[in-house]
Image 1 (cartoon, rainbow, N blue to C red):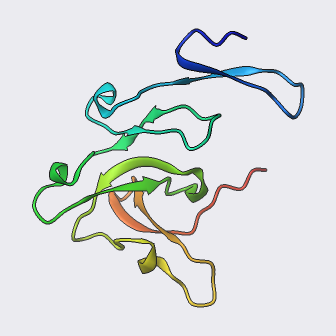
Image 2: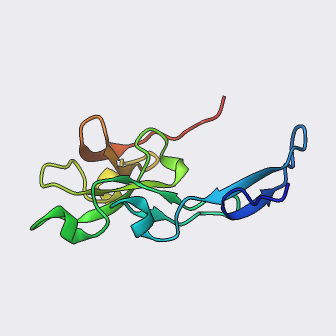
Image 3: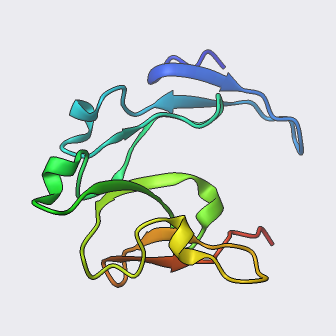
Length: 128
């Protein structure tokens, strides 16, 4: 594959299964390309840059006394940053240190879209 159908195309070589190559394309290079949301830089060569979910890109978007933070997915905390959300005084946590459990694996402080607040999550995506 030539990978010329989108921005910054890269050929991804399959190393398992049917050995089918595919292409990866970036969706953004700056926040301006994301319509008011943040552009997330790829975490590996195989992933594309993508526009984040969320309600902020900088602290000033959140108002007085609030701040903007990156969040992993609440349901799959091992998938990397998926969005940027404002912290509120009513959030259950501010950072991962608030989610420590004695004698157990630590959780992460992540934005929960169901409650629209930050809370501790211990959910990791485990493939079937």
